[in-house]
Image 1 (spheres, rainbow, N blue to C red):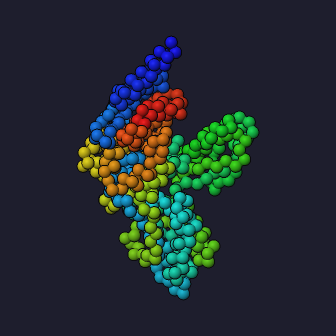
Image 2 (cartoon, rainbow, N blue to C red; image 1 turned 135 degrees about the horizontal axis):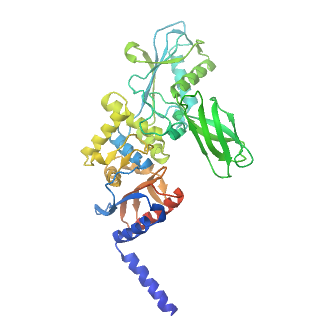
Image 3 (cartoon, rainbow, N blue to C red; image 1 turned 180 degrees about the horizontal axis):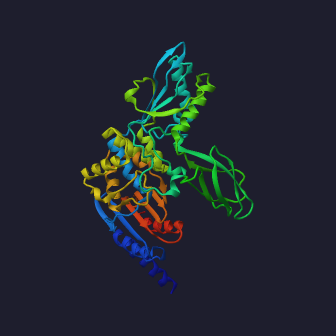
Length: 459
């Protein structure tokens, strides 16, 4: 009996393995959609065989859903194509007025190009102290030992709107919801150091911050992580911090969005100049101007890391700021003015020219943070196919994170989990795929586990 039983199991196993991948995906999809977490949800799934050039499986692939950060694939592909792999942001440093015996009777001048890497810790050349040292040396080399004026920042080529439409209040006070400016600094974020009480729901003390906050933070269970959120002030002078951090933490750091990174840079630059022997006026401050009326003398041009390096962190670390900056830069380079809506229009028109219907790309930002974005799984899939045919593909592929043993970009906002990427199966077949789930109920980690189970069929 045992031999017969084992034989039947072997036959069943062989039969399942012999099923076409499309049939196995269909069976798994039905089980996935019947799961209790999907009772009120909608999902889209599309799989493409890169060897045969045929769709293997698709369900709801042309329904626009909130893609979360898988939308970064759209901005990444567009940036590679419309700006180029070697594109670099340029930030100009100069002065107006005249120099007499080492004294600048005029102002320092900075023209920002929206470089999101200024002051970033991710590259040696962009680290704040290295960058400010580079600028201070350029000023000294110009023969300037003291400055009577201010810092003039040229923002005339940028829209005043730093934050895209559709971002929610809960996000825009936090580091991942930082706005994109003509002159960014330290990824437009700052840290707040906290100390929590020793029991549940006890108060949390703010240990260090240059800002003052309304504080409603409380202590939660050990290991609960950072569940603190900052809300920018509406009708009040101070931002609100609420939520929780783990109990019994003596030095717990959270990162918030800097609402005026240009001012932060100006203050730090002033302090750096003074500490390095370059005197500034007591009233040294910054003001936004247009270059047209200034005619500055440029003493230094700072170049960012190349786009493929910026894109690496954009996709691998899912830095929202980089996506918003890239979208505005496409607008700046193609239209002469940095504006999110103009960038979106250019991106949608570009993809339309490649045969991807722009109506399948209804986006309002470059990062996917807005819950109002709507993209089809099929559109993402076709962008992955497009990327694979380009000379910059290796840079794009390398930047994709690895989850569940697969190279893919993830997406996660409230009620949304999504993945899009590539995988080579053990039988040698190569697939591109996209899956988007909206409005699931219950645990996010549980729905991810079930998505992985579905994707495992591509292995």
